[in-house]
Length: 465
Image 1 (cartoon, rainbow, N blue to C red):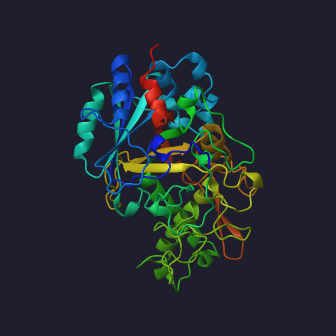
Image 2: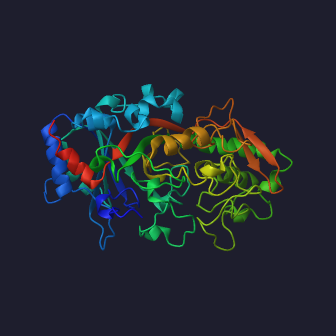
Image 3: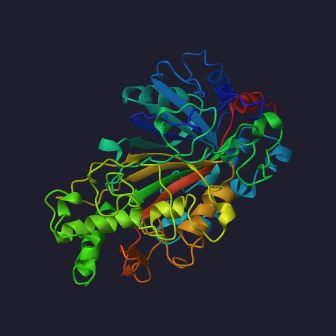
């Protein structure tokens, strides 16, 4: 471990999650430079009751009522007065920003930036995304009012945890995060996945790639212990998803091998009170994701969402004979130690994922057209080598496995019903190809941000040019 490693210098939302009930993301513009710098100085100091303190990474005896953190865009660094010679040391992907990198990450068609609502339709004005986490909604307004005294609030995005930790598609979310040595995270107890080096998420430390340490922007106090975040507003077409499960299950009912996917004699193991069509819907959902909707890994329990004996949600791997399809969302985003074309890439593109749902509750008995989805943060030390590589090469091209190359992730991918396909896996190793998957998740905005260390926020507050 780097001797300079200090948890207290790192913002608290990077290496482990807060697990709070609510989040409010404030999209901010710097229009009064002095006020912005004074705010940052007071926020780092933490002794001003009129300014929320930046939450550091620490092991709490008692969680604070509010957690507050910031991410700064490239234009935000410029607006705060960062000298051009230092701005030039940041990676190309960050300097260009999410809007200009849209095609690389699948943001085209309905997901294209020209369709993003305000404030993401004016990316040059998006300077800071401040995030407020709390267990009740009341503190969110108070902190927002404090922030609004120093910045122009361009927009607000509110998120919340849904019951049972699920997202609107019905899956339990947030399972299997990177874990780091010397970081005590109760949520990771019993997990046997490989320990991730600090360089997975933080600048200035070795990565899993031998001899590779991502370049630290200069000066050292600005770049060191920082991270990058792809902040995404992702609308989920819940009505379209449930309709596609109906369609796929109906087609599978006509397939002679359908009962290999759902044993008519044991349908209750898939879901209570289901008929064969209903069970096939859940099998399609499970294979598309790589987990049953209750979080049980398909790899460990391919025949039952409710196995007779408990199974681990995290401790498993993939092989060439895996029952979990290579094209599933889970295997595309994290192939673990399983077979991929570039074996050296296993575990090298790990991302820290933080997210909460937004939008009104969904009643499947009364479907509506309200927008709902996920406010997601995808955190790593290098946008290009991690987030963009996953989104382009694995999610939307399937380059890591020749059996899925040319297909998109069935949940997150940039699908069109006319060309999309997904191979369901049977117990004997054969597959059934299903088609007609619509685009189920659409981008509704976002930004690449730099998550500065505590020392870096202090440095930004003290700039004088």
